[in-house]
Image (cartoon, rainbow, N blue to C red; front, side, top):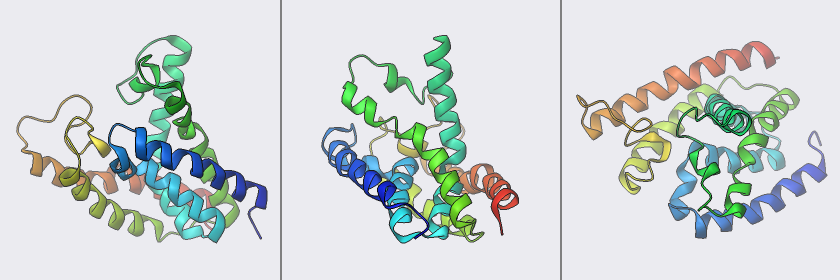
Length: 197
């Protein structure tokens, strides 16, 4: 056993709290789990029990860079009071439930946990292809199934705006190409360089 049992059980208990809470109380309900970070949250649970380097590597390739921006935005505003983008605005919205905002702190724990898992289990280079396939399925499903105001995975606009020259479908097609090239590929190269055996 490469992963301690206490970590497996503790993380699973956390999932038993966050999954029903998000299912019932998140703005998008169960569709909230289409966020790549939430997919990684669940995928990390599977990694812990299966001790799968492929799942750990795939989740890391998919979310480490976006999670870095989430943490920079959150801690930057927490420490300086300055808004560094809209990604973490909900964490400072007093109208939102403290309980739900507290659960969202999984964004702080997820990156180091994934890095530790990849260091422990090894980096599987197939992760780039696996995450590209996953995103190619998830992004169109998210576009069709979710409301523009939820903007899950930014499928309806990037931040507050979408380029005016692009229709919704063209913008989606651009995202399907951009995620692997701009987010997954650089992360893959970095992880392969650091962790590949």
